[in-house]
Amino acid sequence: MINLKACKNCKSIGDSNKCPRCGGETSREWQGYLVVIDPEKSEIARKMGIHASGRYALRVK
Ligand SMILES: [Zn+2]
Image (cartoon, rainbow, N blue to C red; front, side, top):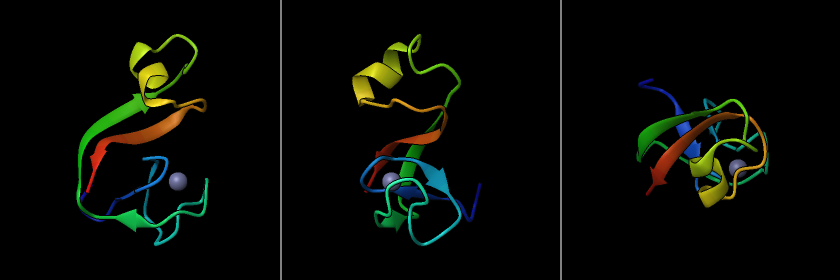
């Protein structure tokens, strides 16, 4: 997970400098790891406004 970055906008985790999902800026300064498999059934995903499955950070600096 060392080189992974999280998007400041949608919190999606990836390894590129730009978020592949929304095109937002990514940051190495993130905390928490959340895997969303079924966003409709995940309470955390709903609270965070996540509507697609994938890997997310809980907090991005
Ligand atoms: Zn994004």
